[in-house]
Image (cartoon, rainbow, N blue to C red):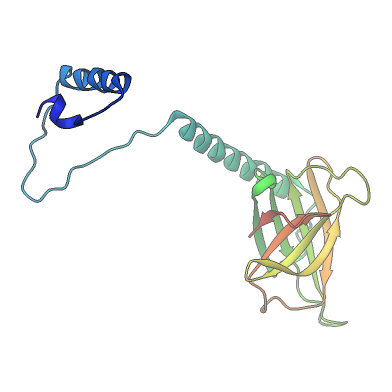
Length: 191
């Protein structure tokens, strides 16, 4: 098919000339070599990853690995008492503005002798330090992924922060844990 049949009547001579140049360029290049295919085989299209996407993934993986190493070493070297039996340990990872942060919640045995409260030792690393006493973080139990009941508030300092919290309610009616910062609903750490 020739150029005039393809474009038909175009009144604007500038547009017609631009299309003529594009048409001539397309005709001047060679077609890519055909790859023999078996009947019924769909063509395979491989899109190369962009370098920025690879760098972001690599950076995220390295940050997660470093956070795990630092958190694990802080946990092992930290002031943990071996005579306390843990009921369970919940691991948390940073999200949103908390990316790179990590935490663990060591749930201690329920206080059966008194009121049945659940003591918890919370270890947090990597969140932005609190500026003042009113700049606190809060640990929440979640329902349907949303903060439902507070487990307590705490301040963050550089390095590993360890806090003791106690809650009166059981954990069966909840589906996870999150940490937020005062004045914001943004989740910074989650299970």
